[in-house]
Image 1: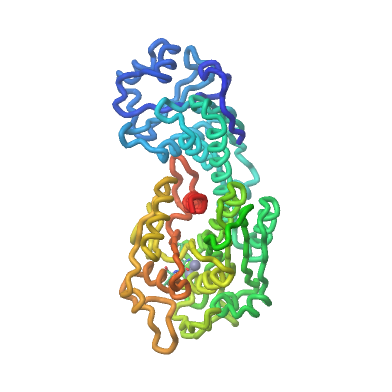
Image 2: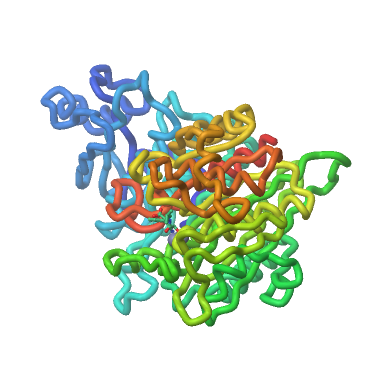
Length: 495
Ligand code: BES
Ligand code: ZN
Ligand code: ZN
């Protein structure tokens, strides 16, 4: 999708569609909307007056061959109440327009921002919405729908802002394309996305983006004594990998923080010997979503160049039953030296993250963020609405949540009190990999990771219920969402 600033007056641009938005109870049609209205001889105001256009959030009205406008169609998207309006709504409006118009075969569209949304941050949100909405999961379909919006002109933005505006547009592009890059990885079935293939994809991306990369193979993993990861991987014929990516700023300041991004990349989670039921098991191809999130974030970080060093550590394996698989009751020794009683082999994500976060600290990370499709319990708590966000110290989590808010990603702070630590005490080892069965499954999982994080400032994102959606939204296709990338990149840039 090509995106460029539109310099011509929007009414005279040749395009398949001109898109703009109308607020709820917008009774005075003025400004840019007024210009459209007068070009159309007052048709717009009469549609508002007779209730055809309500302005309700994401309600749309498509007008064909609008009088006085060069574009073939005029798409009006409802924007809700103006006092509640945010960049996040603008992102959804742009996405909704793309998804509506591509299904009607539009190739070139013009998006008209209105007077209140002319600044760079609005432009960035629009671009993010446009590109994320263009993503389709049709790679393995013989007959492609070939419905792609080829070009989008951005009209109405304040061109006098010059570089600031073009930088924001570029940032939006980089972030949304990185989100789509991650979504592509997540979509791959597990026979086409093994730990080795994921590592190769990471290598190709790193080369293109200019990131340092090191892939730890099964020998190196054994040398490093990553016993928790090995325990999960030993049931599979496919060998595990740990992907390590490095971003260095041009002038690294001595003593500056080093951000570590750790992502769970289980390329298929059968549950292992504690095997999952068949129903919905195919979805467990997306159990590498946390790893893909960090790959997407690193791709964007490489282009947007924050001032701090960032290291991604992505442990990757399958979780399979088999003659060599670990069994419930087995004790594994993690890289840190802590011993773990494996009560349930399906609680494998926390095991590989245990070695992942510990290794990230070994590599010098002073601050950590992990992302993982970790627990079904987070869906019980938050449905597919919010990412569950854990972290210590609380101030560090709060700072991260600021980035989530700024980028329009819904995340909710979850408790990690010491009582949850009590629930992962083992009778025979240092800790056990599941709680005591009295609920709080997302919090006991988080505490398990914290056992290896120690006092390093840390945020843990449980994306099990938000990384993938079974139903499409007006602004986003069903399937992988690419959630958390925007927040993580924003946080790295602000750090
Ligand atoms: N990968 C799953 C979590 C998951 C569930 C992700 C649903 C996406 C959708 C994870 O490895 C898992 O199986 N967790 C168990 C832990 C339990 C055995 C303590 C769970 O949540 O049921
Ligand atoms: Zn599992
Ligand atoms: Zn899993």
